[in-house]
Image (spheres, rainbow, N blue to C red):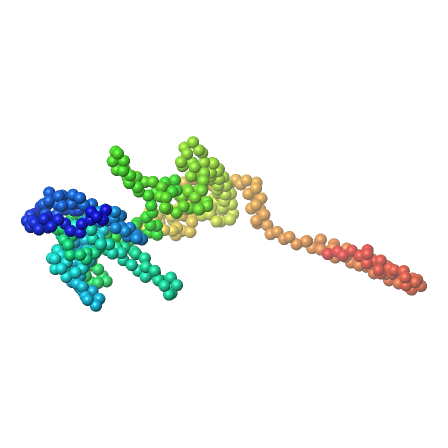
Length: 454
């Protein structure tokens, strides 16, 4: 493969002086629009007919880390529009060498080319920003960084790469001038100067970074978009999806497929899936023949709560006349004359329309009671037996201590027991003096008969 490698375009082709002419077309090899062509399309095809053309996306696909090996082609070229050209500089060696750098782009990828040597600098420094060029078999120069391991030794690892030209052969071919190349005019606040990133001026006004910055600043001013919930990838059946493009004989197909690299939720979250309260809800959503038992349970629970609420309302309505916690009043507690006076006063006040919008009842509930009385007629004064008993107990003062008569009987019974015990002891004391000490006294035996009465 290396035997067929060349480092220069044909001398016959490079010696020809082509006439620049204006065009407005899509350049075939770079896939970029040009407004000036330096080499006719027929001659360019003849020059590159045995050479593999690698656009920048393909170049980065072929030259991969960690080795950054050269593509497996005998001769290859890479193309792009020049977006940057540095000043001529010199190396820091004992014998300085002049060099300058170029940067080519396709508005998505860019790569840097370093040109070394006095002759190369004189030959290629006349290249202009915006020109589309093709570089034949450049050298690959990986970027390297030092990584400390033990403090004494260090290893190097490549992060990316650039291209370099060190020989004096004709390896750069000027194709045309780009019509699309522009530069981001947004202000870089750190440097206080325009951003200057290369953009396609026919399709966009600023670079991707400043587009994202502007979008975030606009979203921050909108309340509906300024929330704690950020955008997430779409999910299906609780599994995160990703967009994939597949090419078939019928064409290109783009669709969503499960993302194999997305993290899986462990444990119960994975079992119940995402966005579902339980496993039954997840199964019922995706299986039309499955009936969720949680729905019936929830309906029964709601029905029971409604019945209990109605019972509580009925009891509160019955207790409201006595407890006074409701604004409505029973008719038997308000005289007919008072009701008529309240109704007349209320209607007179409400006719003015001033008090309709103050937000509360200035009559302390009397207005509502009077209006309710006029709309519904006399209130029902009949009470259920259970309610009447509760109201009667409320009005009576209940004391749980023993009555005076019961306490008097307890004291009398305690005195009788006390007197009977100590009288028997007094009678048995003279007789017990002639008996032996081994026999128990009547006082000891009386302790067994003593009954403590509270």
